[in-house]
Length: 123
Image 1 (cartoon, rainbow, N blue to C red):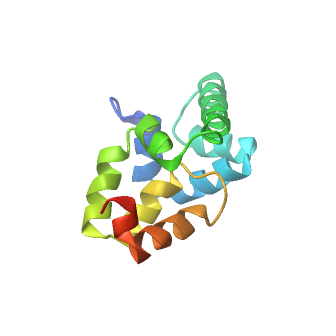
Image 2: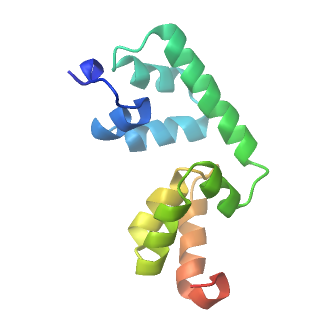
């Protein structure tokens, strides 16, 4: 059972279980109950799940005042982003940017703008 794994972060468990897109949708909607439901699948205590969800929702609010690069750096995704951007891997770029975006469709629009004229973005 996935909840019995040790040494694996909650977000890796969510990803390994194939629930990352569902988690991201719930987080972007600010759907605290859905986020709690997902975390509770991994035998996380209610208190720990609530702390995790509250921290994630607070981070989303914090991101609203940051640029994409600041968000990627803060989330530790800058190297992964740079690698995907150098390969011009649209799906990877969208997936990475979706992790730090706050409005539906923003990641796709940003990636499409970058790939349309990569020289404007230092690529």
